[in-house]
Length: 262
Image (cartoon, rainbow, N blue to C red):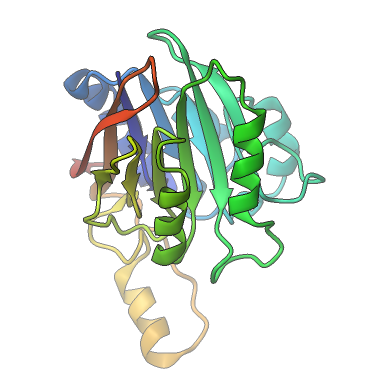
């Protein structure tokens, strides 16, 4: 079987591109299950219930990251969105859940685990390594297909997570930096790994934001609103993981970027 994973969706342009492209990618790569990181889908920062429902029209599960609570009211909305995850290593007092086991429409089950890095990230997050070990112990033995979205800044932390889960997870895919890395591979233990899958955001942008406003901030050091680029050519970065659904071992990973005009 094949899993499709799409990196951080940025703004309306990213949402529209994902809705347009995912059905095509499902057919082209024969993907039975789709996971999308919706971290920046609401005006470039956070998620709303409306944005989540839009993306869930083409995706099976949504993951998030450090901006999950940026949009007012989403802390209440997430309780009604059982296919939306927030990082599992946030406080247990926070709403939502960080992992789940979901039915694959083509048969079987897929566990999706959402984790947040600590290096250069939120200090309030618990250790992602200890957290994922605990979750693996709690998973039903019958669940063999396990996908981990590790939303983290440091490449070293993401690489380490891949090695920790080698042979224990089907795929460990990184998000957060919005730039796809050229290191997609299947580890000898049968785990597909990519340090960062990338984003669904404007092709001409700085991480989905307006180039000129970002340059102004870098050149002057002055505070500046970084507008999201919503139209034009939208770059959708994605990874397709092939795997044996009986044992959960990855057999291939294909990483690519496509442009969609909005």
